[in-house]
Amino acid sequence: MWLKSLDIHYKKMFSITLVLMAILIMTMLFSTNDNIVLGCSFGAGFLLATWFAFIFALPKEEIRGATTNVITYVMSTFWFFSFSIAAINNQIIGHLIDQSGGFTSAFMYIVGVMVIAPIAAQFVFPKAK
Image (cartoon, rainbow, N blue to C red; front, side, top):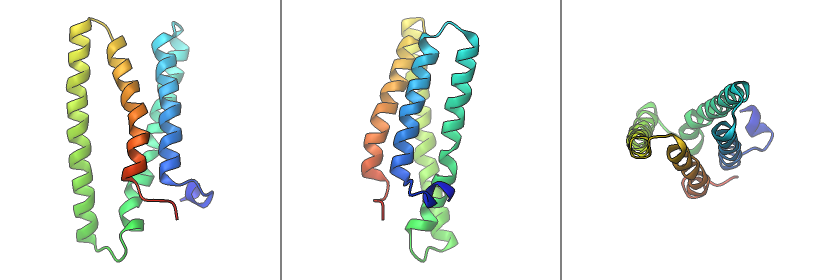
């Protein structure tokens, strides 16, 4: 709610954090310093964790007069699709690692997904009011 009071809307927040996460992941990929890799890993995890407050607040804010049953249905559907997509992505990442014998192609796939995600978010998330 604090970020929303600063007029930082969902789409803007997701887009900014995805770009920052992509930068951190690329830095981790090409860095040889363990401390830099650790710091980038912590930063990417922190940015990912910032999404959860927004995700949980979306149904209550966007669905007028929503009952507990409606919010439960919406969140159940969201988590079903989220974990299904995550499982598919994990299989793709594992396949890329097995095929290439390294992590570079898997990291490039992750960065590609992170580039596509903010574009998709422009169509999925509600418009700023």
